[in-house]
Length: 138
Image 1 (cartoon, rainbow, N blue to C red):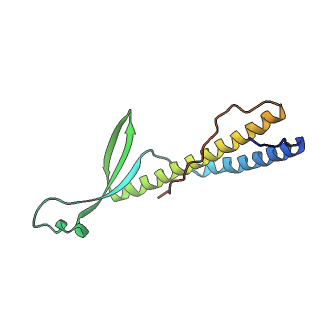
Image 2: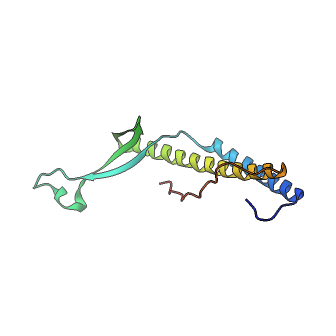
Image 3: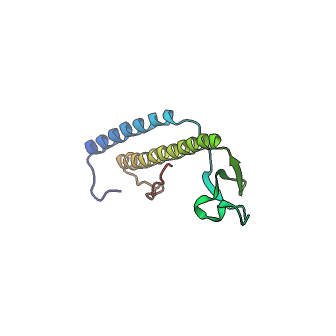
């Protein structure tokens, strides 16, 4: 964790800061709306008719919306209307927001665990969480 030993007062301050930060992050959970697994794709297709406008890549048919997710190890795909796609886009963004909040809670909890065990003179044996790159919530 740290290379130098922290004083009891410093450990207490850090734990208080982590508790405050954790409570702030916890309140963000209430802001998360409905969630949905999976991803949404906007597709444009060519019909294969040699006389159709879709022969030009800039004039393909679409957009068609497709929702894809994993279910018991298999990929499931459904076509959606544009109206339904807008709802699913929001729900998927909510899921990503929830995952980001949970990631912050795990990180703060791990740090607090290190400090709490340090105050008891014991080492932290939990996982060292690697920093993950954030995906954009589009």
